[in-house]
Image (cartoon, rainbow, N blue to C red):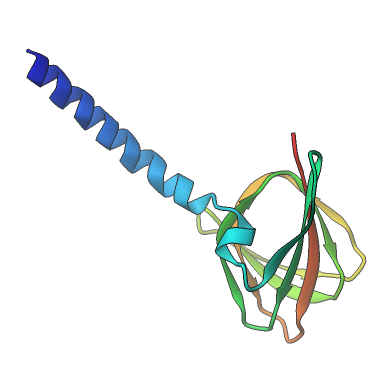
Length: 124
């Protein structure tokens, strides 16, 4: 009886790992998955500020942000791919600060100029 219980519990835990692991892998920290283009420039108990630079054609891996302010320092054209595969393209205009709710996405510079953005992530 104990063996059957252990097998059932093991099967449930393995199934749970298969469901949770892909989501955890997708929801990674941008500074860790894209260290060549992303630098943490300030962090305290209230905010974390990321400086993101991408050359034309450069792609960033899937990552997550909490609610954030996005502050483009240069005008650039960016393609966002959400976790469900939907894509949107946006022109990020220098100086135009925007609010973004918590999200998971990949980012690609699809323009002809370097992108330079500050992302100000709010902490709870």
